Structure formats: structure tokens, C-alpha cells
Length: 106
Image (cartoon, rainbow, N blue to C red):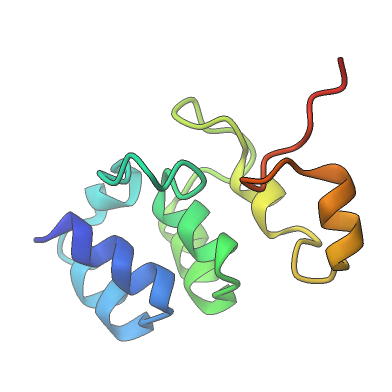
């Protein structure tokens, strides 16, 4: 069980690798990303959604990943996946700061 490799496999879209680690240890589904620099990949579901790996997203949700709210994270995973890949670069620039986070409205 290697949490760093599990997050790397998720980000890379390695369905078999993710499945092989989660099936015997489903509690890993709720483990935080140990990489403090990956602020927008706090959970496995966040990482899969950010990188557009729909098959992994579906599997994680089937296993019980929290979709609509996550007390460990600022942005629910559904916000990471929904429409991001279809937004134009101009739309992203207008709505996000340099790190991909929404601009504050103050």
C-alpha cells in the first residue's frame, strides 16, 4: 500500500493500478493526498476529476467516494469535473486565478 503511487496512478489514469490498490484496501478511498503542493487533488476523486479520467471517477463513486461535499476540501469533486475541459482558455482566465482557483469576488 503506497499512497503516493495510488495518487500518481489516479492522475495518470491507470485504471488497473488504482483498482488493484483499492479493492483490498477500500479505506484508501478517503485518504488525503500527502502532496501538500497538490492543493486541487486533495482526494482520489479530486485527482481523477481534475485529469478527466471518467472511468476512475465512476469507479470511485461506485465505491462510495463523497461527491457533493467533502469536509477535507475546499472544492467538491463535482466542481472540478463539471465543464472544466470544455471551458475555453479565455473563460478559464476570466474566472480563475493563476492556480486554477476561482477568483474572489470582493
